[in-house]
Image 1 (cartoon, rainbow, N blue to C red):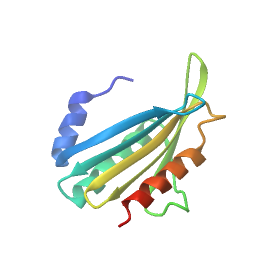
Image 2 (cartoon, rainbow, N blue to C red):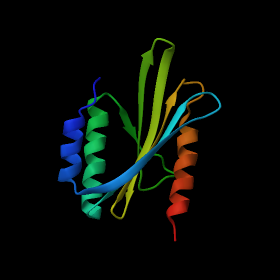
Image 3 (cartoon, rainbow, N blue to C red):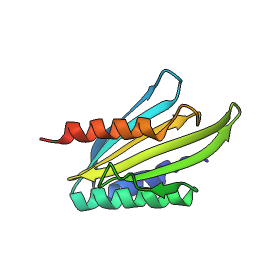
Image 4 (tube, rainbow, N blue to C red):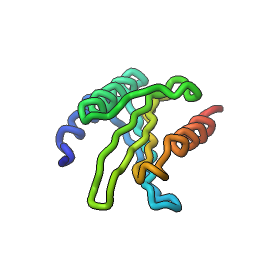
Length: 130
C-alpha cells in the first residue's frame, strides 16, 4: 500500500488543519506505539476528520469496535503479516474540542495487545482534563 500524500494533504486542507504532531516509540518487545494530535479550525472539522479516518480504516479491512471503559472513543483492529510473521494493529481515536487524537500499537499479536493502547489512551485523556 502506497501513501496518498497529495490526497491526505487535500483532505487536511479541506478540514481546516492548523498543525499537529506525531510521535512513535518502540516498547521492550519492539512493537511500535504511535501517538498523533492534529488541530483543526473547529470541533466540527476535527469530528469530520475522525469520521474520514474510520471510513478509511474500514475500507482497508479494519474491524471497528467500542471499548466500554473509554467512552467517546472509537477503536479499531487490523491484522496483516510481513516477512517475520503475523502483525496486529490496535488503535483508538477521539476528538476533544478542535483536536483529533490517534493512538495505536503495531506488532506481534502476542505482545501488541489492546490493553497497551487502552492504558495509553487513558493517560492521554487524563492529561487533557483541566
